[in-house]
Image 1 (tube, rainbow, N blue to C red):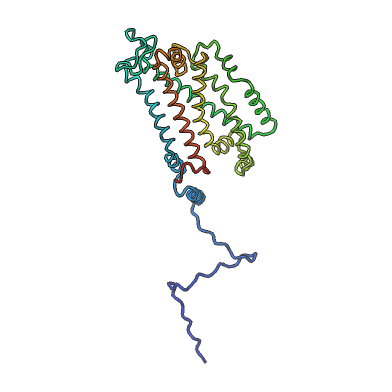
Image 2: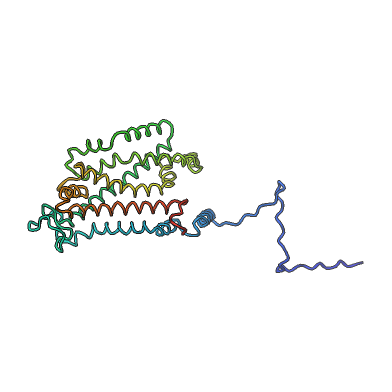
Length: 339
């Protein structure tokens, strides 16, 4: 009887040996191999997706590097930081308070004792400019942050609700935009005695409508996204959807609008104070300093140019920062260069 020849068993280390193919699925197609994922598979996939988009770095680092490549924006940031430091450190650099009077130096030009000269009443102009800059910055930052928050919430709510609620909110916004803002300010500020707090509230009341209209136009497209519809289907409340899903997706626009809002508010406060509807004496702002200096610009030019140059530095620096933020946060912009 013939012996059956032995079959050599191949070594598993043999590189030519291949793993058996997966058995065909019931529908006749080859079974699809899926990579194994651990418990944090979803987080890893999200991180891999973000890394593929940003080149392996965090979004914040990407935005920061794009912003730092914008030289005008960096220069604007340096100027703004200098002005903010001047507000806090400036009063300690001089022995004069903004209310003190030097009766022996009335309307004198800049000197080692009075760096920016003195006013017609004998006030130290450096101390007054520093205090006026701080007051204008306080008003501008408060108004900008408040109007950005209010406009973001109301504009997103209008877009999310839709229907009659949306039409009612937009009708109110359009009606308020038709009324001249100067008339509203004159009516609301009259009798306040030039209190900067009242002016701040008035600027917030009249300043949120136009940004809310812009936010609404962008939130319309976001409300049709799949994640918003899924949140609605799961029974998530409207305010929670607005705060968690809609507003974060327009965050870049809100940041740029808030930065530009500082410039707009500073110009509004300066113009209103210059016309006598803003901050009034004995309080000091850049606006009423310009008003006082304009009356004596020919005889004592330093009383006008000191607050004027400070105002220009503040507005230009914020405009440069806003331009840099827009380029850094916009994925379609090439102004910031590649990270």
